[in-house]
Length: 117
Image 1 (cartoon, rainbow, N blue to C red):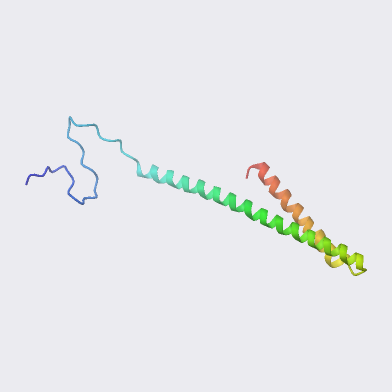
Image 2 (spheres, rainbow, N blue to C red):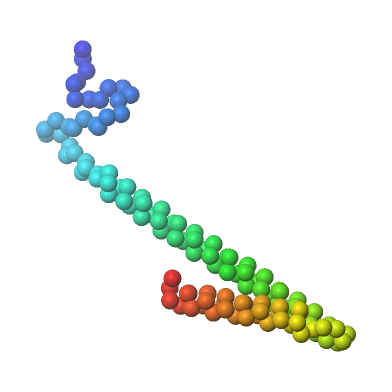
């Protein structure tokens, strides 16, 4: 047998052999728990960024939808009023409710952004 006993065998997945005295200094030990904590912190930061972007997109889509409903209901109320039909209850009320919802959504998003949440 000509193999040196400190060298790992082929296919060995265990820890690397340490050099004998007088050789190059050993690499510093890497704390596996610290590596796991760093990886977890990186995943958490990535998750927070993804959630922030998806939240902004959801607020934008909801604001566009409420703006469209407000515009469409107000337009319907104006047309109904010019024809002499009922305009106050169904279309004007829906326009006011959607407009109030739009204002509330935009105010909430603006305050949340200013607070840095």
